[in-house]
Length: 129
Image (cartoon, rainbow, N blue to C red):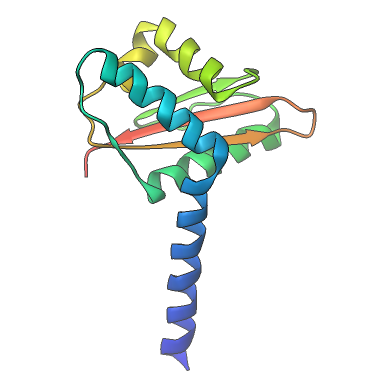
């Protein structure tokens, strides 16, 4: 019975992770970031389920408290932009944020959440795996 419960938990986590990548806004952010990398000849980063989950969880947290807060580590955050493209464009205009989009990290994840007031929150997470 214990093995069956563990199997169900693992399957649920795998399912949740795959749904994160299928999120339209997450995919739009990834596509916009990879276009920026392609412009200067950098390779694509791998869109990672675990990092997308981390980014989505942090975006949801910020939306729940209705303010931006850095979670530390290798992440970028934004709020208020109407589209994923606008968030990526804003990060590209900032040297510190652009450095993450164009970093040598092999994997990335993106997340989005909307607060009760309607404000959009975006997160990008980058890591070598």
